[in-house]
Amino acid sequence: MNSDFCVAVHGLVFLKHKGCTISSEELAENICTNPARVRKVMAKLKKVGLVQTKEGKVGGYTSVEQAEDITLYRVAEVLDIRFVEASWRSGDSDMNCMIASGMADVMDEIYLNLNDMCLEKLKTITIGEIERKLIEIRAQKQAKAAVG
Image (cartoon, rainbow, N blue to C red):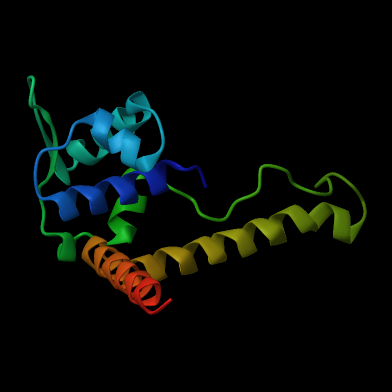
């Protein structure tokens, strides 16, 4: 998995929380990355209608859909993210050994199944739910700080 997924989720949660137009520079500062990277990821989200852009001096991005309706599955789908995959395969399919000739295919199937399980779980998590969790975590930290 590449980090585009994290950039997209972070950006969507921030846009939802702020509820206004946010520049790529401000998004990048909050995400802790560069504006060009934000624009690259947001362009994919814009293409499917998850965000819209406004041009000009006060331009930037705004969330289009209700955060409760945006699942992390949809974000992963838009970005064509694979969560579990391997860039290296062991063995060699041309070898005479049963283990060496078959291991890569067996591992590929395991990775595919794990990826499918990840995607199924992401169907149950929304951008709005992530924002609520962040608000809850902040409240807990503030309560601890007030006691301590």
